[in-house]
Image 1 (tube, helix red, strand yellow):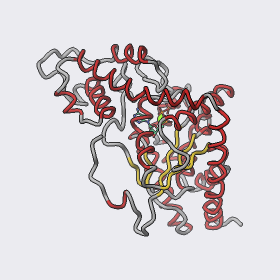
Image 2 (spheres, rainbow, N blue to C red):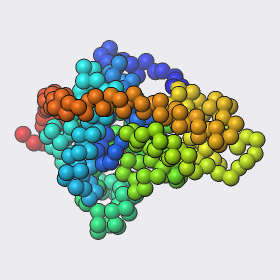
Image 3 (cartoon, protein in one colour):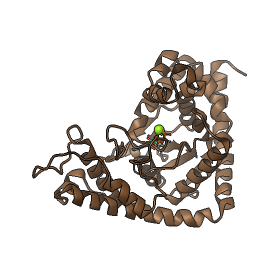
Image 4 (cartoon, protein in one colour):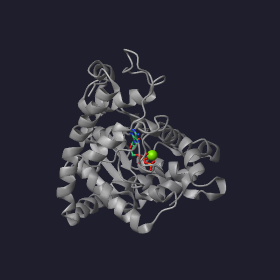
Length: 347
Ligand code: ATP
Ligand code: MG
């Protein structure tokens, strides 16, 4: 992994205590390599130096049409995969959002802070509304979900939010709401910073590199799932869209002119701890690059899948981790919701 220049505040707050970090993953589908490289890896790294709260945002999985049994199953799978990827209940608090009532409690107070204009500008709202069948077909929660996400974050007073680049606009909104609330009613919230990884912060769909890889994508063809077997990984990468360039420098990192090739280079770089340019130097052809990519992905997924298999044999133990985390979060968030209520004029 390339290293960003480190700022001292990344590891310690001015008061000398470790920073607090919060990140959530929505069980809206089966987790992807994008979720792993863009978010989970940063979350795993954060456990070593920060006080971490990491959650399964099951409420966010109900903003579009959903099936209750499937939601329950996906939520279990995501909770288990978070552990399989290396999140450790000894070093981070793991929880399900729906089990911590302060999330929805604070969301309403923040809905009284947010403006409809700023919510209408959210890119993900516009995209998912289109997918959900236009303005009349979208759930109201799809519109208000960034406010719930702001509540998810602000309740834990984190300094940093380790997420993929696609969450930039939502974290910006969270900052705006925190600043506006603090200015209007008093200093209740910490204003958080986004923290994105240096490479593969926005992994693209292999079949359509103009789109980001998403677990809720309509087509599975260009989406690598964390539980895909090696043959499936090989097939999806083998069919990844590149371009018709056959020149001597066809394998090069140029995201604008060569989105498909650049995406594969970033994927290998993120999996192997290298840089896209160095990877390009070792792959003379698209075929060689795809072989490198397949090997790199399979070796990242192999230990995750092995651990997942072990954890899945004892679902009760996984549930206990999340139940204990939720109890801790209820204690943690109660005083913050209380402070917000008092500041806004309730109680
Ligand atoms: P959905 O399609 O339901 O929105 P998603 O794949 O975008 O699913 P989220 O639950 O919205 O996943 O996001 C979980 C985390 O994964 C976030 O931190 C997000 O920024 C990150 N993430 C999602 N997709 C990518 C991607 N393609 N590249 C890097 N990071 C990503
Ligand atoms: Mg998303």
